[in-house]
Length: 112
Image (cartoon, rainbow, N blue to C red):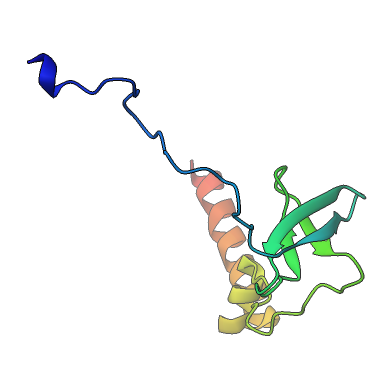
């Protein structure tokens, strides 16, 4: 059984290769800034496409230094309940419905 054991080496992710002569890939360090002035540095490959916006570790949106925030044409404006209601009914109709409902409510209160 002793002839099967591994001697002189720990088990795990040990490599026998050395890092001598190995050259890392070219990189570039890009600076982003949040609206409150927080600076964020991100390292990218020199061949990578640099995004104009980066989310910092604190969750804030940071814009690349000397750049502008891109305008996304796919962003839809936020629709509120009121906006959706106005798509279905006019203001005059809504006022009439409110008057009718208030009248019914007042009649129920009187009869109770």
